Length: 345
Image (tube, helix red, strand yellow):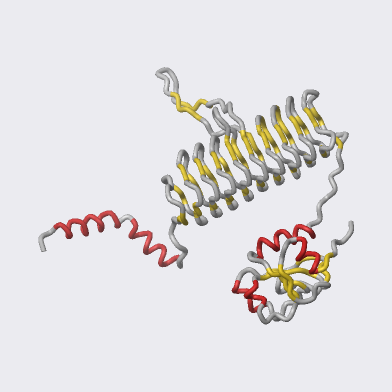
């Protein structure tokens, strides 16, 4: 595999960045501001790391124009250094070569359709009437059930399961261990006069619809809908170990951090961000451009854009125990205050 090698000037021209310093400085990789070598690219986006710039060994640093004032090294000037670095770093990401074709160990139903230039890895199983489109890659150990679609240039890295009626758009990336299209948690509690009350399963007849350019993290689960589909619109990004319940709808360009969960039939708008381990109760609606901070629990619909939080801040255990003991006294205290306000002055 050839090592990527670019000059600072080539990178500036390719990504429409400003250039200060030595345009012939060569870049063969990326590194952190504190540890990058002379042939590596680093970035400065957070002002709190400004002090590391003077001692950085990086040959080229991506930064804002005001941070470049007085910097003696070579700089690429960007309005948003972190976004620019994401584009630049992609040039140095090693990507395994996926040759077109079907591995001999794969088991494919005769009714499935596989594009000639798709890659089907070792020990893959593909069910009836499913389709793998042009340029898609299905990695080792993946299981694709019946009536599924893997869109063009999408990639299932390894051990991904599409249970049934899962449709992936174009350029979708699914990380190992993810399960899409499993049964939603649909149950009805039946009470009969001649038997013990018990749960009965509600059939999950819908599917999962994933738009273009989405990413689904490792061991994340997305349940199929009870009647209609569970939906991820275009450019939704899900971290690892997330649970998406049946009939959830997530708007385009929204992102969710690890271990968050959304209960059934909730609707999340466009350009939303859900922090790690946050939860959204079922049948709620969150409007566009809402941020829910980590460990928060959304218990009612959110109608106005903005940032929302819940939970008790971290404190030392002794203080927490004292405050927790007073939680159950808050209602009585509030009643006393309200009664005192009503007394004649």
